[in-house]
Amino acid sequence: MASPISKSLISVLIALFLISSSFASSDVPFIVAHKKASLKRLKSGAERISVSIDIHNQGTSTAYDVSLTDDSWPQDKFDVISGNISQSWERLDAGGILSHSFELDAKVKGMFHGSPALITFRIPTKAALQEAYSTPMLPLDVLAEKPTENKLELVCYFSVLKNVADVLSKLVV
Image 1 (cartoon, helix red, strand yellow):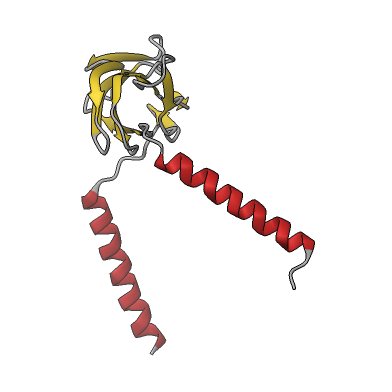
Image 2 (cartoon, rainbow, N blue to C red):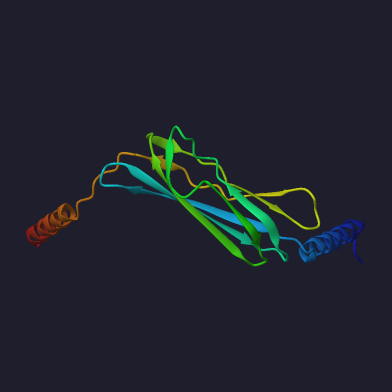
């Protein structure tokens, strides 16, 4: 025979299952956005940041008037050189993906922590504008001093180490 506590726990679990299944079956868009940024050092010593944002509609209905805004790039630290930090689309169908990218030039050296991008959209059954946010991006060490990696130097270094190891192995025997 089940105790009153286990009966209550089972009732709560059944209620949670029914509530979650009703949300899962509702006919709405579900927006998931992923933001990525990568650094590329140019020969001039400048650094370029490539930003891409992928927006997925994992819901069961279309999202309308989809807008993306990524205001995490202050003008005193970055110049937009290709694309725009915002973009709009008429719709994003269920199961669909939208992608947007832009490039920036860094003006200031240091660690940069960008915020998530904002995605707004409309659902036909609701008057209010809906909001979603992208994933945050990893911190960027902009214009950081990076050691130069000369492949020829590495090959010579490993060749010397091999020769030393050969000499040492003959001395030990």
